[in-house]
Image 1 (cartoon, rainbow, N blue to C red):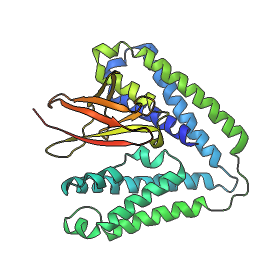
Image 2 (spheres, rainbow, N blue to C red):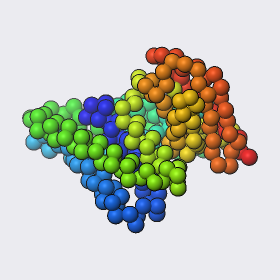
Image 3 (cartoon, rainbow, N blue to C red):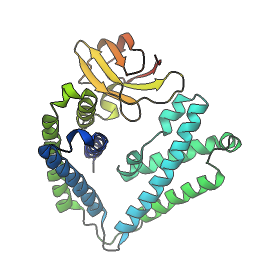
Image 4 (tube, helix red, strand yellow):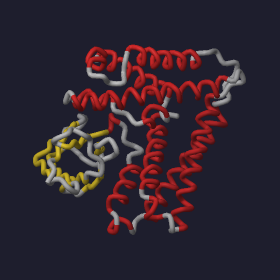
Length: 303
C-alpha cells in the first residue's frame, strides 16, 4: 500500500474500534449494523490483499506475516512500558516518540513498521540503566529478544522470491476496495448523523477518525496533545474547537488532535479545549504558519 492507502486503512481501523466501543448505541439499528458489517468485510479484504501483494511461490508470505506480528507485538509491549517510564520521569518528548498502539506497529507499510520497532528498541536501550534500576519490565534480555524479532523479519523480507504475485491484479483489486471503503465510511457518517446531538462524543469521534484519511504529517498545520496536568496521562475525548471558522474534533486514544493545512490556513486562531471533569482551556492568538507544523501540548486541570 502507498502512504495514502495506509492512512485510509488506519482510519478505517480507528473508526471500527470507536464503533465497537459504542456498540450499545447502534446495535439495534439494522442499517448501521449492516454497514458496520460491510466495514469489517472491507478491512478484512484489504488485509488479504496486503498479504497477496507479498505472496510468492516460495511460501514466504505466511512466514513473513507471522514474523511481522511477532515483532510488532514485542515492540508494542516495550512501547507501553517505555510510555509509563516516560510519564514517571516527566519526559513528554520521549513518550510522544515511542507511545504507539498495536495498529501503529502492525497494520502499516513494512519499512515504516521496521523503523518504529527499531526506534522503540533504541530508545529503550538508551535508558536501559534507569529502566533496570527502576524495576521496569525491560532488560537487556528483553531488548535482545526484540532485536532478534526485528532481525528475523528483515531476514524473511529480504529472502529472494522466485515470483511476486502482487502487481497488476492485486493492485487493481486494492484500488477498487479502497473506493468501496470510502463509500462505506461516507454512508456510516450519514447514518450516524442523529448522534450529533444525542451523543456528540461518539459522532465527533467517528467523523474525526474517518476524516483523517488524507492527513499525513507533511500536510498538518497543527497537532495538539492533551495531558492531565497532575499525572501527564494522555486524555482521550477532549473536545478541541477552533473558533472562526468553527472546527470541532475529539482527541484520539493517544490524546492527539490533528488539523490539516487545508482546515487551518495561515492565521491566528482561538482554540478552546473541553473535557468533562476538567476546567476548560482557552488558547488565544495561536499562530499557524504556512508550511510549518505547530505542535501544542495542553495540560488540562481537574475541577
